[in-house]
Image (cartoon, rainbow, N blue to C red; front, side, top):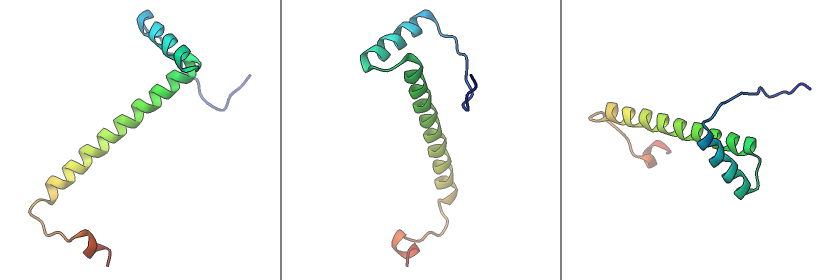
Length: 75
């Protein structure tokens, strides 16, 4: 059976597997579904951190330069 979505094979420590099994059972989800959800959440958090760092860098670069207010920008 072929699938449109690539599959990954990941190996966890037994303790991690036990935690994933407990969480999946408690939430009424499959272990694979829960793991996918957790990975996507982690990726989103990493992206947020990267974007925050980029914004902070841009704010530092803009210090001392002429700026305009939000209202002025949207006139």
